[in-house]
Image (cartoon, rainbow, N blue to C red):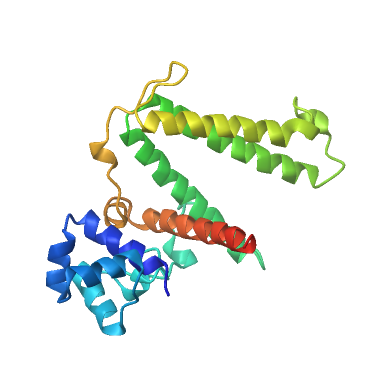
Length: 235
Protein backbone atom coordinates (compact mmCIF):
# COMPACT_ATOMS: atom_id res chain seq x y z
CA UNK A 1 0.00 0.00 0.00
CA UNK A 2 1.27 3.46 -0.91
CA UNK A 3 1.94 5.41 2.29
CA UNK A 4 2.04 8.84 0.65
CA UNK A 5 -1.43 8.78 -0.91
CA UNK A 6 -3.44 8.98 2.36
CA UNK A 7 -1.28 11.82 3.65
CA UNK A 8 -1.42 13.82 0.43
CA UNK A 9 -5.17 13.57 -0.24
CA UNK A 10 -5.82 14.63 3.35
CA UNK A 11 -3.39 17.53 3.00
CA UNK A 12 -4.94 18.68 -0.29
CA UNK A 13 -8.46 18.61 1.12
CA UNK A 14 -7.52 20.59 4.21
CA UNK A 15 -5.43 23.10 2.25
CA UNK A 16 -8.46 23.87 0.12
CA UNK A 17 -10.80 24.08 3.10
CA UNK A 18 -13.04 21.26 1.84
CA UNK A 19 -14.92 19.11 4.33
CA UNK A 20 -14.54 15.36 4.10
CA UNK A 21 -18.30 15.08 3.48
CA UNK A 22 -18.19 17.45 0.49
CA UNK A 23 -15.05 15.89 -1.00
CA UNK A 24 -16.61 12.43 -0.76
CA UNK A 25 -19.81 13.64 -2.45
CA UNK A 26 -17.86 15.39 -5.22
CA UNK A 27 -15.77 12.26 -5.80
CA UNK A 28 -18.82 10.00 -5.84
CA UNK A 29 -18.01 7.85 -2.82
CA UNK A 30 -19.22 7.61 0.76
CA UNK A 31 -17.63 9.70 3.48
CA UNK A 32 -16.77 6.48 5.31
CA UNK A 33 -14.81 5.19 2.31
CA UNK A 34 -12.97 8.48 1.87
CA UNK A 35 -12.12 8.38 5.56
CA UNK A 36 -10.63 4.92 5.06
CA UNK A 37 -8.59 6.18 2.11
CA UNK A 38 -7.30 9.16 4.10
CA UNK A 39 -6.37 6.96 7.05
CA UNK A 40 -4.67 4.39 4.82
CA UNK A 41 -7.04 1.64 5.94
CA UNK A 42 -8.06 0.83 2.38
CA UNK A 43 -6.30 1.25 -0.94
CA UNK A 44 -8.13 2.93 -3.81
CA UNK A 45 -8.32 1.76 -7.40
CA UNK A 46 -6.84 3.44 -10.48
CA UNK A 47 -10.14 5.08 -11.44
CA UNK A 48 -10.42 6.85 -8.09
CA UNK A 49 -6.76 7.89 -8.25
CA UNK A 50 -7.32 9.61 -11.61
CA UNK A 51 -10.58 11.18 -10.44
CA UNK A 52 -8.88 12.56 -7.33
CA UNK A 53 -6.01 13.98 -9.40
CA UNK A 54 -8.54 15.78 -11.62
CA UNK A 55 -10.52 16.97 -8.60
CA UNK A 56 -7.52 18.61 -6.94
CA UNK A 57 -5.87 19.55 -10.24
CA UNK A 58 -2.65 17.69 -9.48
CA UNK A 59 -0.81 14.79 -11.10
CA UNK A 60 -1.14 11.15 -10.15
CA UNK A 61 2.61 11.10 -9.51
CA UNK A 62 2.13 13.84 -6.90
CA UNK A 63 -0.71 11.94 -5.21
CA UNK A 64 1.49 8.86 -4.99
CA UNK A 65 4.47 10.78 -3.64
CA UNK A 66 6.54 10.09 -6.73
CA UNK A 67 6.99 13.81 -7.42
CA UNK A 68 7.18 16.65 -4.88
CA UNK A 69 5.47 19.00 -7.32
CA UNK A 70 1.68 19.12 -7.82
CA UNK A 71 2.12 19.10 -11.60
CA UNK A 72 4.30 15.99 -11.35
CA UNK A 73 7.21 17.63 -13.10
CA UNK A 74 10.62 15.96 -12.98
CA UNK A 75 13.22 18.58 -12.16
CA UNK A 76 16.25 18.81 -14.43
CA UNK A 77 19.51 20.71 -13.96
CA UNK A 78 18.43 23.33 -16.50
CA UNK A 79 15.13 23.92 -14.68
CA UNK A 80 16.87 25.17 -11.53
CA UNK A 81 17.53 28.93 -11.56
CA UNK A 82 21.15 30.01 -11.60
CA UNK A 83 22.35 31.73 -8.44
CA UNK A 84 24.41 34.03 -10.62
CA UNK A 85 23.03 34.12 -14.20
CA UNK A 86 26.13 36.01 -15.35
CA UNK A 87 28.46 33.23 -14.28
CA UNK A 88 27.12 29.82 -15.28
CA UNK A 89 29.05 27.06 -13.57
CA UNK A 90 30.82 24.60 -15.85
CA UNK A 91 29.99 21.06 -14.84
CA UNK A 92 33.06 18.88 -14.50
CA UNK A 93 33.00 15.32 -15.78
CA UNK A 94 31.22 13.15 -13.26
CA UNK A 95 30.11 16.19 -11.27
CA UNK A 96 26.56 16.63 -12.57
CA UNK A 97 24.90 15.42 -9.38
CA UNK A 98 27.09 17.62 -7.19
CA UNK A 99 26.31 20.67 -9.33
CA UNK A 100 22.61 19.75 -9.35
CA UNK A 101 22.52 19.45 -5.57
CA UNK A 102 24.44 22.70 -5.15
CA UNK A 103 21.80 24.57 -7.13
CA UNK A 104 19.03 22.83 -5.18
CA UNK A 105 20.52 23.89 -1.84
CA UNK A 106 21.23 27.49 -2.87
CA UNK A 107 17.72 28.03 -4.22
CA UNK A 108 16.09 26.24 -1.29
CA UNK A 109 17.97 28.41 1.21
CA UNK A 110 16.91 31.52 -0.73
CA UNK A 111 13.25 30.52 -0.38
CA UNK A 112 13.78 29.64 3.28
CA UNK A 113 15.17 33.08 4.11
CA UNK A 114 12.30 34.76 2.29
CA UNK A 115 9.81 32.76 4.37
CA UNK A 116 11.72 33.56 7.55
CA UNK A 117 11.51 37.28 6.80
CA UNK A 118 7.73 36.99 6.49
CA UNK A 119 7.50 35.94 10.13
CA UNK A 120 8.88 39.37 11.06
CA UNK A 121 10.75 37.65 13.88
CA UNK A 122 14.33 38.73 14.52
CA UNK A 123 14.76 35.67 16.74
CA UNK A 124 13.83 33.18 14.02
CA UNK A 125 16.04 34.96 11.49
CA UNK A 126 18.98 34.96 13.91
CA UNK A 127 18.62 31.30 14.88
CA UNK A 128 18.09 30.05 11.32
CA UNK A 129 21.12 32.03 10.14
CA UNK A 130 23.31 30.72 12.96
CA UNK A 131 22.16 27.15 12.38
CA UNK A 132 23.04 27.26 8.68
CA UNK A 133 26.41 28.91 9.35
CA UNK A 134 27.24 26.16 11.86
CA UNK A 135 26.31 23.44 9.36
CA UNK A 136 28.60 25.04 6.76
CA UNK A 137 31.33 25.27 9.41
CA UNK A 138 31.03 21.55 10.20
CA UNK A 139 31.26 20.48 6.58
CA UNK A 140 34.10 22.90 5.87
CA UNK A 141 36.15 21.37 8.66
CA UNK A 142 35.61 17.90 7.19
CA UNK A 143 36.75 19.07 3.77
CA UNK A 144 39.68 20.93 5.34
CA UNK A 145 40.81 17.83 7.22
CA UNK A 146 40.74 15.69 4.06
CA UNK A 147 44.27 16.91 3.39
CA UNK A 148 46.48 16.11 6.40
CA UNK A 149 48.83 18.89 5.36
CA UNK A 150 46.22 21.50 6.24
CA UNK A 151 47.18 23.01 9.58
CA UNK A 152 44.46 22.69 12.25
CA UNK A 153 45.72 25.91 13.81
CA UNK A 154 43.57 27.53 11.15
CA UNK A 155 40.77 27.11 13.72
CA UNK A 156 40.51 28.18 17.36
CA UNK A 157 38.40 25.15 18.41
CA UNK A 158 40.39 21.88 18.62
CA UNK A 159 39.41 19.34 15.98
CA UNK A 160 38.58 16.66 18.53
CA UNK A 161 35.69 18.68 19.99
CA UNK A 162 34.70 20.87 17.04
CA UNK A 163 32.04 18.63 15.52
CA UNK A 164 30.34 17.88 18.84
CA UNK A 165 30.45 21.52 19.91
CA UNK A 166 28.98 22.66 16.61
CA UNK A 167 26.21 20.05 16.85
CA UNK A 168 25.39 21.24 20.37
CA UNK A 169 25.24 24.86 19.21
CA UNK A 170 23.01 23.82 16.29
CA UNK A 171 20.63 22.07 18.67
CA UNK A 172 20.33 25.26 20.73
CA UNK A 173 19.61 27.28 17.58
CA UNK A 174 16.98 24.78 16.53
CA UNK A 175 15.32 24.84 19.94
CA UNK A 176 15.27 28.65 20.10
CA UNK A 177 13.89 28.96 16.56
CA UNK A 178 11.21 26.38 17.30
CA UNK A 179 10.21 28.23 20.46
CA UNK A 180 9.97 31.56 18.64
CA UNK A 181 7.92 29.99 15.86
CA UNK A 182 5.42 28.80 18.48
CA UNK A 183 5.27 32.21 20.14
CA UNK A 184 7.48 31.40 23.13
CA UNK A 185 10.14 33.92 24.15
CA UNK A 186 13.47 32.27 25.08
CA UNK A 187 16.59 33.98 26.43
CA UNK A 188 15.24 37.43 25.74
CA UNK A 189 14.44 36.63 22.10
CA UNK A 190 11.35 38.11 20.55
CA UNK A 191 8.62 35.87 19.16
CA UNK A 192 7.11 35.47 15.72
CA UNK A 193 4.83 38.46 15.22
CA UNK A 194 3.09 37.35 12.04
CA UNK A 195 1.45 34.10 10.97
CA UNK A 196 -0.94 35.07 8.16
CA UNK A 197 1.88 35.58 5.67
CA UNK A 198 3.49 32.24 6.47
CA UNK A 199 0.65 29.95 5.37
CA UNK A 200 2.53 27.54 3.10
CA UNK A 201 1.27 25.07 0.51
CA UNK A 202 2.97 23.52 -2.51
CA UNK A 203 0.85 25.73 -4.77
CA UNK A 204 1.57 28.93 -2.84
CA UNK A 205 5.30 28.22 -3.03
CA UNK A 206 5.11 27.57 -6.77
CA UNK A 207 3.12 30.76 -7.36
CA UNK A 208 5.44 33.01 -5.38
CA UNK A 209 8.86 31.50 -6.01
CA UNK A 210 8.49 29.94 -9.45
CA UNK A 211 11.54 27.77 -10.22
CA UNK A 212 13.09 28.17 -6.78
CA UNK A 213 10.12 26.45 -5.15
CA UNK A 214 10.94 23.26 -7.05
CA UNK A 215 14.35 23.23 -5.39
CA UNK A 216 12.86 23.44 -1.91
CA UNK A 217 10.25 20.75 -2.64
CA UNK A 218 12.94 18.42 -3.96
CA UNK A 219 15.20 19.10 -0.96
CA UNK A 220 12.29 18.12 1.31
CA UNK A 221 11.55 14.96 -0.67
CA UNK A 222 15.20 13.88 -0.88
CA UNK A 223 15.80 14.58 2.82
CA UNK A 224 12.76 12.60 3.94
CA UNK A 225 13.69 9.72 1.64
CA UNK A 226 17.12 9.61 3.28
CA UNK A 227 15.56 9.67 6.76
CA UNK A 228 13.16 6.88 5.82
CA UNK A 229 16.07 4.76 4.64
CA UNK A 230 17.70 5.17 8.06
CA UNK A 231 14.45 4.39 9.87
CA UNK A 232 13.82 1.32 7.75
CA UNK A 233 17.34 0.02 8.31
CA UNK A 234 16.64 -0.06 12.05
CA UNK A 235 13.66 -2.39 11.64
